[in-house]
Image 1: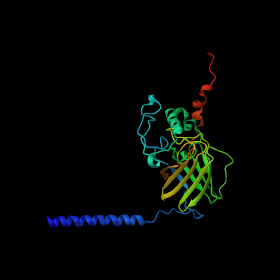
Image 2: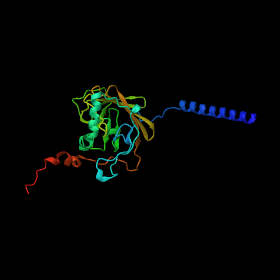
Image 3: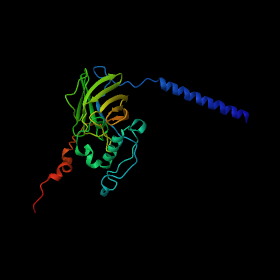
Image 4: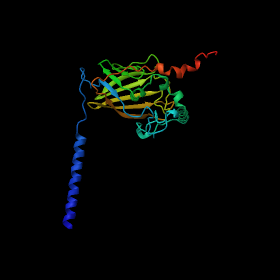
Amino acid sequence: MRNRLSDSVIAGVAVAALLLAATHIAAQAPAYRAPRAPDGKPNLNGIWQALNTADWDLQGHAAAKGPVASLGAVFAVPPGLSVVEGDEIPYLPAAAAQKKQNQANWTALDPEAKCYLPGVPRATYLPYPFQIVQSPQNVLIAYEYAGAVRTINMGAPTKAPGDSWMGWSNGRWEGETLVVDVTSLMENTWFDRAGNFHSDALHVVERYTPRSADTLTYEATIEDPKVFSRPWKISMPLYRRVEKDARLLEYKCVEFAEELMYGSLRKKSSN
């Protein structure tokens, strides 16, 4: 019995030592280094897409019935894990009340339903692909949703001439990471269908970091002193679309929103 016990102890110590060694080796493994663009910077060119439920709700949420009861399970809300660090969005009290009102009336109020441009960061995790095209001077991001486009200035930072739906983007490289400082965003966009919103004081810092040949890590730090008590962060993986003929297709949704927005103005028949 004593020998068996000793053998078990020795085996346990050996396994622990192997696990510790493996952990040490993994910790020392070099971080992924992306292929280089002609200017020597990480090459992020490609078509990418988020595969999560963040557009429904940034925070963790259970499945729920959809907005149209007669459709049954069609368009029901899928369950999803949180993409918010700590799963807490630090609203100021008045803003928290506004968020609840937004959520209760989201089908009528959500800018996505009206085909408004999505803003940043929502454009990244809408359920549509987007394409990154980079050059030394600028990085272009083209989104399938509503034909949205943004240009990231990679030179000396510049100031926006005014607020816009997609904001004003100045970028820089920090090692393998593309860092984008986004300001001058209009207050007319939301973060998701759950009514999470912001004001015209929104400031977003995005980070795009290659993690493998076909994945990026996307992080966005969100600051808005009119709405939130402190900055907060979201993060998620982005996946390369690798189909042989992968490309952005045309999705101009304005015509789908006309009845919602202008149907009440239709001239009624006198008959």
